[in-house]
Amino acid sequence: MKYILRKILIFLVTLWVAMTINFILPRMMPGNPAEALIARAHGRVSAQALHSLEVAFGVNVHQNIFVQYFEYLGRTLTGNFGISITYYPSTVAYEIETHMPWTLALIGVTTVLAFAFGTILGISTAWKRESIASTISLPVSIFFNSVPYFWLALLFQYLLAFILGWFPISGAFAATGPQGIALIGSILYHAILPASTIFITALGGWVLTMRNNMISVLSEDFVTFAYAGGLPDSVIEYNYAARNAILPNFTGFAMAIGFVVSGALLVEMVFSYPGIGYLLYQSVVNLDYPLMQALFFFITVTVLVANFIADMTYVLVDPRVRT
Amino acid sequence: MNYLKLFFKDKKAAVGSGMLLFFVFIAIFAPYIAPYSPTYMGFTPMEASSWKHLLGTTANGQDVFSQIIWGTRISLVVGLIVGALTTVISVVIGFLAGYFPGVIDEILNLLTNVFLIIPGLPLMIVLAAYMPSRGMWTIIFVITVTGWAWGARVLRPQVMSLKSREFVNASVVVGEGSFHIIFYDILPNTAGLIAANFFGSAIYGVLSEAALEFLGLGNPNAVSWGTMLFWAENSQATFFGQWEWLLIPGLFIALLSTSFALMNFAVDEITNPRLRKR
Image (cartoon, rainbow over the protein chains, first blue to last red):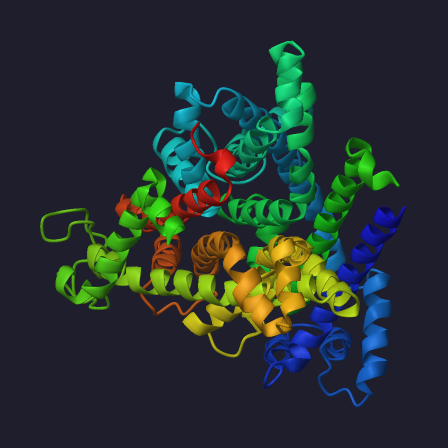
């Protein structure tokens, strides 16, 4: 119970910190950068929209900073993120809502797959440590774990899409507007390149951590005892060693998931995949602060939820924290 | 000393440090290795590889090979400085939290967990976008602020466990102060973790710098591998057949971070004897 309460506390505090960073940053920087944004927006957006921008960033507002802060918290918690400058007159909330499903599907599926495959590969490379496949997979994993995601995406895009023409260069579905089954096929076809880039670069990290955990566990006394007891190899490999070796992978999930999501966002940018990463890129290029801040907040919330699920699964796999 | 000997005997560490030395050499002797000035724009733009331009030219008529050579400096320096600064912060926070139980530990541990979960790149992007100036130090600052949590998280339990060992108790009984215990008893015993932390942070630094510069959040006029990728992508280099301009900077980023990763792996094997070859 203490473990779960702790995780809930961390969840709430992180949420609060993410919101507060968004509030403080524009107000803390010399010469409030949001002023430049508002100056640019002049004449392009309605007077009402302009005023809401000023309120959001504390420009020309003669209110006490604490009043501003609590009003800001209220707006964020009710999902009011203001208007996007890039996609005016569309609201930030609407843009995120329409782009989010693409990212959740792409990154969600690839992350789960990379975690599953990486863990299995890590188990087998540790189990058959001296085999040729294990000896090769180690430096390969180290290299792919060190490659910039977006660069691999650019290479794949150039080689497989531009030169060979096997896959579409960018986008999430054909511009011709296919319907029904054809649309689903088109969506899957467009997802192959970005998905495999994320999968390949995320895989290495999981392989390496699982391999090292597994090797440590394999030298524990209870494993030796299992051998002595004459248990079959497959039982020792999975039921004894892997079951214990996977635990640190769950606790390390927080760091890894943030890293994978960050990389995946860059992959989306390269392939102009219409998800959150692409939106983030647009907000950076246009210095669209309302959109950028809301995206930061949403990505944090998504990672928090993913992490919370991992933490709760941990309760199921490790009986020690249930007390 | 024994550990240092083990480190240099390790094959992975030898390859890793060899690669790092190679990059250090290039960075120091850049003016002598590069045939042209990296910022000189007088050549024919978008030229393919030739003996005159080993890796061709950019859209602005600069020599790609010379840019790669000079670009080594920024990427290497950012990696090393981020590694060092991040490690210092992780050590301070990890040690304080691990050594002083109670309120200090609770607060620092919560802080660490929060920074561990907040995804690095989006936070870096927001920070960098608000920064009044764009440059190497802004990038170093942004990466360091977002990257220290992992190290602190790893060090804290280690310090807690070391603190309850016999030899530390012996120091307490003899009447040594906290300063002595932290720096003479506990610190040497976490050297392996701290070294691994440094290499891990250096990888994080090199890759994050590349990402931020690729997004245009660095100084676009500085010559570094990340900004080269930014310009190559924005000039549609591959579309014009100038693929070397895109391939080589990314490959060098990958190789530099692989060199840190190899040394990181070697340190892991040395400090955790179980990982060594039987």
